Structure formats: structure tokens, C-alpha cells
Length: 526
Image (cartoon, rainbow, N blue to C red; front, side, top):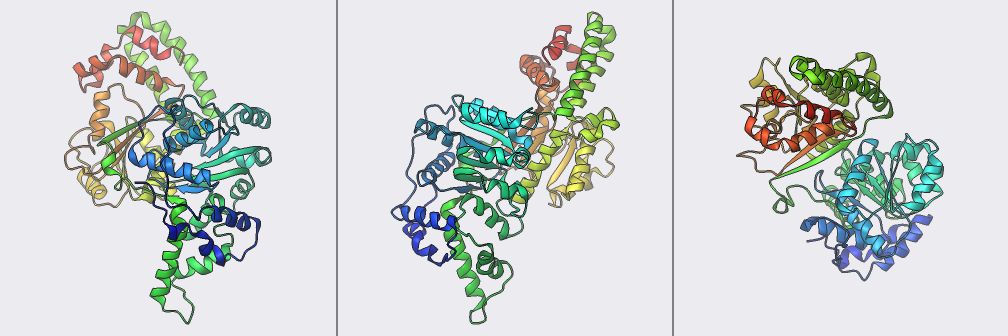
């Protein structure tokens, strides 16, 4: 069932009478709220024909809710847990607006690491939508942005670009603004938050699994963007809600507990029509036992330039050796391993390139921080222990507790028990060390940082958490660096599926079975 909007919630006029602030947002908000007074619920909307996906019941309810808000020109916060398909719900909604005659483009702002996900999800679910990515690698971004807005249904850009080019974004009339991973903009004092609040859009939808981590002030700052007239005064919001609810401060003539409960109930009543949150546990019957998603990650410009140079060098070397593969197999595999490591992080190949960083680790950190805030736990696998070491350093710097298991781990049982007891939300595991004898049903998210030659070994890793005793749905993210050898490894996996089944879990035996043509294929167009 969709979110219920009762007369008591939508008789917003009376609820908002205490908004004495006559700033423009409050005035326009009153007019909008008045139009809502007759609403009794969220009516169903047919899923557009152009959507190539079967929406689960809760996703359909989310789509209906977005359309309902759109009809009343209201923004909102879509706060479903990670992995429940927020992007699909939004793409379905944008497709609906196109079918209904909206011609202005929607703007999606997201962390740089998520841009390619929007492109691939749109191509998969709403292939009829014209999508443009405007990222920091564009030459004349202002020209690129204007051209994209003229020719696209959906313009996807990063928070960084929006901050740098705020004037150009402000010039365009957007149908709507979608703030993905909106926890990135929940500080109202930042230049980014102030810039976004000046963009011209009929509605703003904040999208995040964590609308509030530390304080109600974070929720207020998102509502300031999504529903600017709901709580226009930060000071009043602080006095009325933050002080009694968080700090326990109440007026002298009020009974403490009752006053706090009243304020909390009023806040919930106000916010409920404009915020939709479903946890994984809430929608469990709608989910398969295991969901897998390919998470495409684009290399940064500096990383891409370095990779392409090394690729050309290794391609020439390997193609010169391939005619006598049996004799040169070790050298060839050393080249392939070098490219696979370089796809992850330049620092794995040469520490002098450490400042280039790793988009994959950026993406992992964003996801893991969100999961930690939502109370979930993740297993993170890689074949390369050196990459897990880099991941550990990043988690350490971010203050996220983790457990770490590889071949050099001495107190294996102690490390495993530490994770099971709930001390750490993240468990870094090397494929060789963690492939056998582990049962970790405490985790419900799995990240595969690199594709492996042998998918049987990948499945074994996933089955550390997805096995008997697991009561939660398991989400699996296979992270792939686009335009690298990792994409070729995936293709090879699919081509050689039968061979994998025959060989099962012996990576070395599989490596022996790769032919010269297979290896050439790894370099074709890579």
C-alpha cells in the first residue's frame, strides 16, 4: 500500500497557520497546501509503456506518490533503504511526465561516482528517455549544459559541477530537480546547498536512505530544498522541534514528557505526506532472496589517461607473445594482472600515482557510510589484498569500524567473532582467505570490488552471507570499472560459463584453459 494521506494530514491550511513568516516560500506554500485540502489519498497511476521493468508493489506505490506530489507541484524526500530501487521509481516518474506532455528537462545532481549508474539504469529501464551526462571533464561546460538541456529529458551532473557552475544551472528552467544521495547537501551553510536552493525547478525531490543521521537539523535542511515553505524559519524549527525533541528543553508551564510527545507527533504529521521511507525489512515479502546489481564506476580523467597509456604498452607486448602462449603464459598473465590492478587503483601498481586515488573506493565509502547509518552490515571482497589494505585505510580515515581477514590474519576466529558480535559494520575479506569455512549471515550486503576469472568463486563468496540461517534479503553489488579490462573479464565469464562449471573453483586450472583468442578478446577495444 502507498503512503496514506488522511484529511488530518492534508488539511494543511490549519496546520500551517502558525507559519507567520511571510517569506515568498511560505506564501507560495500556503497556496499549494490549500490545493491539497481535498486530497484523501494517493491515487494509482498506470506505469508508462516505455518502462521496461516490472515494478514491485512498493516501487509502484513510490511511483504513485511521486506523481501525486508532482500533480500538486510539491517536492518531497524519497528515503527508501539502499538497494530498494529508488532510481527505478524516479525514472518511471520522469517517463510519466514526458508522456503527460512535460517538455522541460529534469536535472539530476549526484556524487560523481553515481553518474554512470544513472546512465546505465536509464538505458536499461527507460530506453526512450534522452539522457545527457554533464561532468567535470567537459571543455566548455556552460555550452555543454545548455545543449544538454535543449536536447535531453534528463540531465545528470555532479554536485561538484553544480557548485562550480551554479550561474549556468540557474539560467535554465528545469521541470524538476532530483538530488540523489542527498545526504551530500544536508548542510545549509555550504555554498552547494545555497546554490541549489536558487535553481529554478517546479519541484525538488531529495533522494537518500539516510535523511537524518545525527540531528533533526539535517532533516530541516533537506526539507528546506524539497518543501521550502513547510518550515521556512530555521530558528522556529529549532525552538519548536529540535530543543524539546532532542535536548529535552520545554517551556516552564509545560509538562516535559507530554510536551515533547506532542511536538514529535506534530512533526511527524507535518512531514509524513512529504517523506516516503521503506526499510528492507518492511518490504521483505516483495523482494527475492538475493538481488544482484552491476555497479559501473567511471575512472577519473587522470586515472583514465594513465590506464590508456599502460593498456597500449601491454597490448603490444602481449600480442607479440601470444603466438607461443604456452611458453609465454606467465608473462601474459602478469600483464593481465597489472591491468586488473590498474583498473582498481593506480597506487597498486606504483605508489607514486597514489594521489590519483580510486573512484571505486570513493563509491564504496559512500555506500558503506549509508549502510552504516541505516544499520546494515556489509562483506567486501577482493582478490587483491593490497586493494583491501587501501580500502581499510579509507575506512579508518572516515571513522568507520571494520574487520579485516586475509591470508596473513593470525587470529582468524577472533576477527570473525568480532564482526559477528556487531562491533564493525564492514568486513573486508580476501577471496582466498574467505572462500571457505565462513558463515556470515549477520551481513546482508555484499560488494565484489573486482570481477574474478572464475564466477564459481564469486558465487562462493556471496554464499558466505546468502545461506541457511540468513533471514534477510541479500543485496550483491558487482563493481566494474567501465572501459577497462574488467568489462572484458565479465564478457569472458559469460562466454565460458560451461567451462567454469566444469572447472568449478580452481582459478589456476581455468587460467590454463584460456586460449590465445580469449586473451586477444581481453584487449579488443579495451
